[in-house]
Image (cartoon, rainbow, N blue to C red; front, side, top):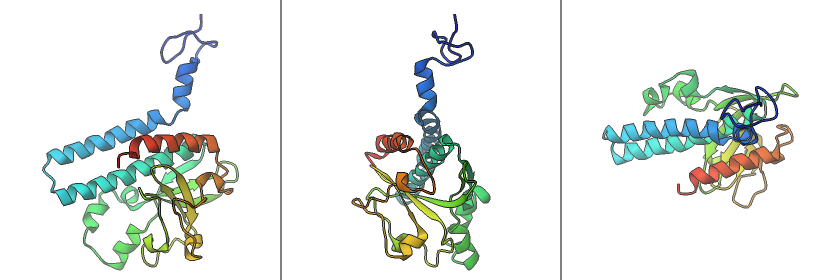
Length: 212
């Protein structure tokens, strides 16, 4: 009798997965939960280290951003995109701490680096992607750094309920993301994403961010 390679339950094929394990593998929660748990463990350690309230709030904001990035990274990976972390903390580990309070032109350019480069597996087109978390589901041109140089970048906004997307060019045209706007990530034809997968990740975002 064939057994599931994960749990040992009955399955139709040797070397395969049972229905329950197959569904778990398809779900984004396993991969994302593991990363989120690691991030939150780091935050707990920092709390024990005696951070000030201001420093802890800063760290917590960073954590929310990192979790939003993780959700988007796993979403695109699950749809076979090539995903490359591009932001400053990935290119130059530890640079964020070194640049705190630094206002030089070079420092500003480093801070503005998008979080990801994404490559569409079908068209091979590549995109700069910046990921943001906003509990109020609002993002407009004023939220971009001044003189933001990546005019061809996409801003993906994770909120408590939705995942939306807008380009820097659209922001400069006066468009914006709001709770009532219809610029959902699934509507971006250039990405050609599976809307059911996006819904899965939206549900996960709701689970994590509902009390934020």
